[in-house]
Amino acid sequence: MRAGPVASTAAGALARRRVQSLMIGVVLLISTFASVLAVALIVDSNSPFDKAFAAQHGAQLTATINASRATPAELAATTRLPGVTAAAGPYPLAAATTTVRAQGIGLIATQDSLLLVGRNSPGGALDDLRLISGHWPSSDSQVVLSPVNPDGNATVSTNATGETITVTNAPGAPTLTVVGIADSVTQTADGWVLPGEIGRLTRPETPAAAQMLYRFASGASTAALAADGAALRRALPRGALIATQPYLNVQTQESEKIALFVPFVVAFGVIGLVLSVLIVANVISGAVVSDYSRIGILKSIGFTPGQVVATYVAQAMVPGAVGVVIGAGLGDLLAERLILRRTATAYDVGVLGVPAWIVVGIPLALWLLTGAVALVPALR
Image (cartoon, rainbow, N blue to C red; front, top):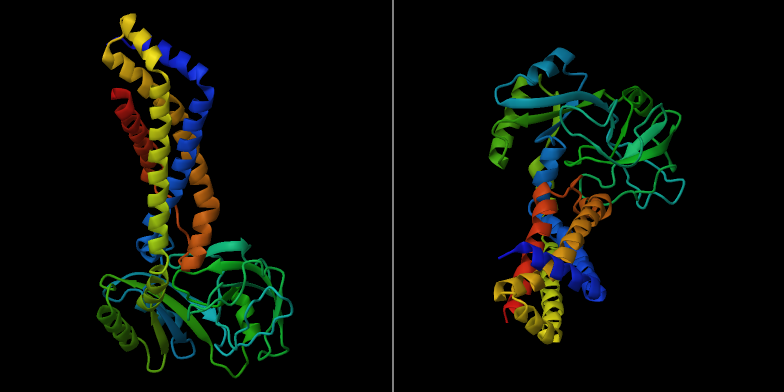
């Protein structure tokens, strides 16, 4: 079958049928756009905590240390315990009874206490913090807050930057300006300041405290983490380990939230795919039915049945290719910039993204599906 006559005839048909060609392109654009979003949501709804935990190098165990009972050398020695695969800290922290008083409206809930940790940057060997808005503290008297507390409850809105909080139980009741909102996948703190600021937020009689973060080779179960925590306690002086928080507690909370979203996400994706198939089939069927006389002319000038079928399939495939490429680009852009960012916030899991196979595979699948759908009425 020669491709030249098919290509020229299909090009002429596309020029004559601009409205139908535009309709197919727009339908495929919207369908690809919606499908990329839907499949990305479906994929990210499958264990999003695990994806975010890996991407943000989450800590399997968060330990609160009485720094007055353990020397820096003793804390450093815990990072070399058998089974420890990664560690970060010690990060100084303010007493857990630090209270705040909102001065504006950006703080949508006020806690009786905040756990404030001193860190120089949001990155590190473990627990990379994702800045949702604003910036990291660049000077004293600045704080970055978490949008949720360790209990999973919302405490601040994402537009709380610029608000001020007063630490009422610290000497002189110092005031902190909120300069950013950041997410910790395992919710290791309520907020972060520069390390030098912790001393100003702690009463002189309060023992110095620090936070250590760990990952273990066998930390995938509650029993294993309990054993690792016990080994950590034995390695430190008596009374040095105040408390530990395993990441599995947070994972359970997030899994319960996600279970409510998944059915709606799946339905959204299925509806988009079904509508695209029905619309493309209807458009091609209309083109074939309205062109019965032209099909006869093509056969009379020597077109084989295969060339006629290829001509009408091409009328769907060409505008469809344009539509799926643009739709994939828009879907990826919107998914990354808006939808998945909001979804990550709803799931409280940090960053979510669109896998490359979705951006490539979904448009290709829809384009081939368009050809298959167009082939049925064309063969008829």
